Image (cartoon, rainbow, N blue to C red; front, side, top):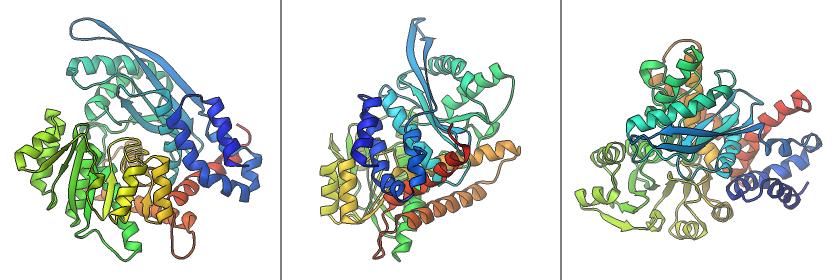
Length: 444
């Protein structure tokens, strides 16, 4: 089995889906050599089966805006694999949503969920609906219409959606209310719910916290710590905010945030006051970081990315393919020693190759941002036993899960001379568990 012929087949079957091709290639580069060492996986065509979703559901979502105009969007649910548990993955509401993006996210989710050690399969869904600028009643009507179709395809033991970009607690609440109304049952069929109706503590913080916990594990293995490390963060949304919160708590210096308008540089490191302002600005006002920079006297770099600032550690927490080959070269030139991906596939494949060749500490998103889905899995557990754990208990579970992810990366990514390829380790570690399950099931 060789990479070139395999990828040729993937692109032929999935034309014009560049994000999906990229995600598959990143995994295949490490998994195919592993498969060649374990012919039973090749004979059973495990990787070919994992690159074909179990099913793709596409549907119309009709709704009425506040002016009583009928609007039409497209809804999706891509159920990739339930080999090790019910389908699990977020819903994304954004104008950029396409089948290619959802297939890449669902494919990644399969391996990410496997790494958590929790019994969850991989899926992703959403719509090209953009909640920005919409009123609460408009968002409610859209969510209710979306769930009216989606409810046919989900359930607590079938498929358990969660939030993602454009889908926060508000949207999950509207979706859950409609599901409950139609099904007549109160069950853990969605995660990311409010604490008053079955949600889990630190679900909102979990992706950012988990990313930092993994970085801490990686540094610890090198007898280093986060204290006084200069950190670049891209993004200023939920993941970026809570990664920054945890980094500041652990003694690191967060010197950048970014949004679609550019990035802000905070030379001495963000304070909790700075972070609180950003959270309010982005959560309640939907404002620009340019406002934040002006308020505190920091420099705002219009239409630029933060990677040109000298740092020790980098945390891309914005969106896919935000960090390209040129950005990777700049980070390496300035001595960056660790890149930990808080968002999904934020580094282009050329950038990934540069990090791997330089042998810096590089944690791919399927390992580094698994904290969010890990807490979603724990929310499912709490719903099943009709109990809510304390914030401290959930945080302990999260730290344990990120530690286990690190252990798998070390086990499968050891390249000798004390060098660990966390990319190789995450890809093979995530693949192995799912592959064994598929073999056990026979040809299905």
